[in-house]
Amino acid sequence: MRAFTCFLFVTLCALRAEAAESSEQLSLAKERFHEAAEAHERGAHAEAARLFEEAYRLAPRAQALFNAAVAWQEANEPERAANNFETALAVGGLEEPNLDQARSRLEVLKRTLGYLLVPEPVGGQLSVGHLERVSIPVRTHLGAGTYLVRIVYPNGATLSKQIKLAAGEAQTLNLPSTSPTTNAEASPTNAPAPSPQPTSHNAQKAAPMAAFTAPRPEQPRTDSNRQFWGWFGVGTGAVLAGGAVVLGVKFLQANQAWDDSGNRDKGKESQAHSLRLFTNLAWAGAAASTGTGLLLLSSPKFEF
Image (cartoon, rainbow, N blue to C red; front, side, top):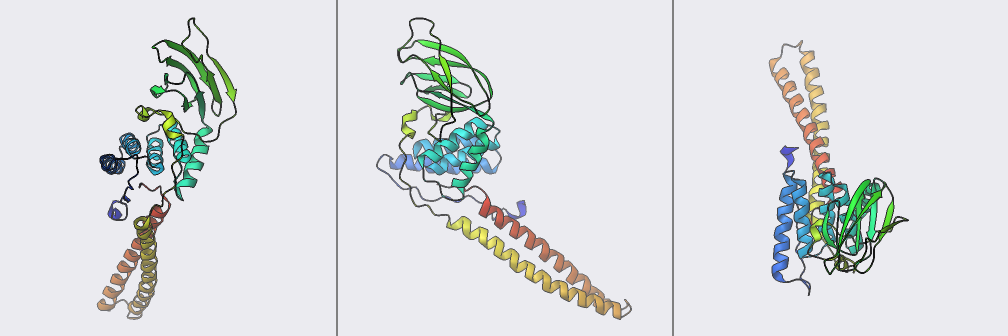
């Protein structure tokens, strides 16, 4: 597929300035997004995911978190992927086909992961699994297993609790809202799996979870370049396939003429061999062009 990398490029749409976003933030977000796309191209999926998350922190766009989720999934980090898919859906603004992909991928991930909700103490910090000192309240996906949850209260007091999560299980960890004076036990309770809500994750330490709760208005986004090259690839493949059919017919005629000459006419032999070569090249080009076009039309979009 390297021979057709001209079709496989990242489309970047212009960032729209909003009241809460400075021009410097927008510029940095666009820079991080470019860096993330380049990291993904060279197979550095974890690096790409972190850079996409940084782009989101600077200029919140659901598409950036969707891209981060895809990259985390490719980096074999399903918990982080699920958190980002869930937040992207809660923020709003994803367009087809990414909206359907985010929903279906999250549904599949939830079957293998547990879900932990920690509503209190508000303003405290939680560490568990891949999360380190994130602000409470917290909603996060974790792999099935046993975890040590560490809580730091706003006044510096600490509390630790061991929990066990099963695949597909949701637990709410009930903790004292104020710092405990004794070794208080946290009480985990089972709950139905919640609908998609904003989640905290490691790359969002600088932004409390409350920052993700208010969905942003959907903004129009363009995908003209990606769609154009995708359909261009499919159309080119169709043209090449038509040419291959014509060349194939001419090859059969030239081959028959060579046979009629008793296989002694070198000119007819050379013509038949040339037509066979061109026919095979046309079919190969048609297959590659059509496949690349379909890949562009169906694969996740890395764009704001």
